[in-house]
Each structure stands twice: as C-alpha cells, then as structure tokens.
Length: 449
Ligand SMILES: [Zn+2]
Ligand SMILES: [Zn+2]
Image (tube, rainbow, N blue to C red):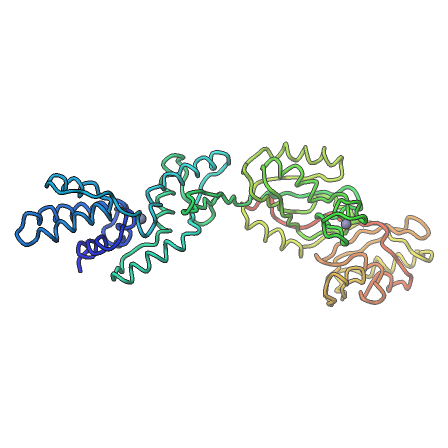
C-alpha cells in the first residue's frame, strides 16, 4: 500500500495531528520535519478527494475522505473544500489519538526550557524526553495494526525539535557526549527540568593543623542526624579539609553539594605539608561553571583561619578524578617524632639508619582500622627511613615509602603485624608521636584537562 493509501485509512479511523502522521512515515524523504511530512500528505489527500468529488460514482467516498481529513485530521483546507462545494461541515473531532494534541504545544516546553536555562551557565546542552511511554505505546500499536515500518519514536522528534528551537534562540550547540546541562522534557505536562552536570576543580591541599579528617566524617552514633554524642552536629569532627574547601567553592558555583576525591589521605592526626596532596573537588548541580579560582584560594585560606591552604586550583574534566585517585599508590614523604619507652642509644640510631634502604615490608591491616577494613597482608616498599636523636627517648624521623604504607605501624610493629619494623630492629617499643606528610608524588600540573 502506498503512503497515501495507508494515510487515508489511518485518518478515516483515527484522529491524527500533522506531527504524528508525518512521524509514522518518518523514514521517507530526508531533510523534512515530521510536521511538514504530515501536512504534505494531508494536502495531497485533500486535493485528490476534492478532484474525485466531481467524478461519477466516486462522490460518496471522496466526501467521506474530505470529512475525515477535516474532522480527524484537523486539516483546514479540507473543510474549505467541503464548504466551497456547498456541503455542511461538522466541528473538528477529538484530539490526536497518538499525542493527545501535545505535539502542537512543543513551543511551551521550549519557552519553559529557555526560562530555566537563562538562570544558569552552560556552553552546550542536550534534550531528553522522559515519561512519554504511553505515547510510544500508542504509536507502536498503530504501526503494528497498519503495517507502518518506517515510523520514528516520538521521543526523537521532541528531542530534536526542542533542541533545534533552543539552539536557534541561544546560539548554543547540542552536545551528545558530555553536555553541561540535560534538559528533560515532560511531554504530558509540557514542563522541563534541568540536570546540571558536575564541574571538577583540581588542586593540592595543605593541612596545617592536626586532628582534622580529610573528608566530612559523620557521627558514628547518629550517622549525621544529630545526637547528644556529637552535640547535635551530626559530625565526629567539627570540620574537615573537604568542608573548608567546599564552603568556598560550592557557593561560588551555586552548587548543591560536593564530592571529594583525594590522592590517598593522611591520618586525622597527621598534617599534610610540602606541596600538598592532589585532589579533585566535584561540585554537584552547579549553576555557575566558571569563577575566579585564585580568589577562591585566598578565601579558603582566610576562612579556615590557616587550617587549610589550597594551591594551583584549576578547572578540569571528569577523567581527572581517576587520575588523582590512582595517585594514592605513588610515593609519599613523611616526617615526624618517635617516642621510645626506653632510652635510645647511639647504636640504636645507627641500626635504624642502616636498616630501611629500599626494603620490602609485609603489613597486615593495622589493629586501629581493622574494624573498618578487611584484614589483608600487603607488601610495601620503604625507600628510606632516617632518624636523629633529639632527646633521651625522642627521635625525629624522615621517611619515604610506597603509597598506602602505614607509617605508624612501620614504626611500632603493631604487635608483629608489620615486619620488619623500626621497633623490631632495635628491640624497643616505639610509638609515632607526630606525623606529617611532606610530599605526594604525582605529575598532574602539566597534564591537560
Ligand atoms: Zn499527534
Ligand atoms: Zn551524633
């Protein structure tokens, strides 16, 4: 059956708008909008029915076709033809049985999208239709009953038409892979909602005060709700590196929250000095995608009252998250103080300084974290470990180790769970009293976004 034959059958049995009729034959003809396809089919059918109206024996069928085109197709020229030929004309019938008249109101969705987009920063966008399942079911049913193998899903038409209309007004392109904003169209209500993709800020942080975790740490009793244990803050520690940074960056981006990705982490009681530790802060639902980062660096330092400093902030792409996280395994430099139960001799110092030159150690998960992490044994390399006596029971130390080495346990031996250990080498019980991270190796500064 030809396009015309199928179309007149469809229109005699169902109310169908221009968009939906055209979409049922979307495969045929290129560079045409579905609405134009639908109008063109109805135009040809109207002309043909009007021509047949004066042919003997054809009048009844021709008149029925013209009425179908007007009543079911809502096609004004068919009504004009009937009136011209002196026929009575009934009012237009029900709305389109596929879209229920929705496709004629796409301009409302476009306007709603433009109003929302006006309030945010974005370079590109993508349109996605949600909640069109009923419409899709009806068009699939029609396609099956009428043998229409060339139809297109309503979703694609909405996505394309709304996308083109937004581009035409804003001049911003559609981006399929990684759009700054996803415009979700809800066709039943002709409303839109925006999904803003995260932005990512890379930098290095220095933590200049002990007793602060890297990321927000919820109270273990109430898990953030607030209880007597945490003084109704919901948190185990009053602040964290993450919060000190997020408190500045999230409001600048007008975001809804953050995720913190660090190249490993130091203990709560360790400082992070030197050039700092690489991190990426992901800011969720940002209305602003670019802002002054050097101003942000100054503000973080001021507002945290010297507890946290950040260096080299810059905007990066999402792939930087994995790159920074893999830095967890890179070399680290440490410094700190060791306290001994017994007095330290010069011989002890000599033994320690000679013992850890590119040495492999075996570490089981430390007792202090074994409740939170699986108990496994890891091989780690200690590249260097040097001490200097600064009191009868006190040693200053500097160490360089493979990422993921538990330095406190390397010193104490953790009751034999780390071997060899500094304690074990001299047979005296040692404890890491202070720990600072001096450096985290990593080549991020020169890499692109
Ligand atoms: Zn329709
Ligand atoms: Zn609590």
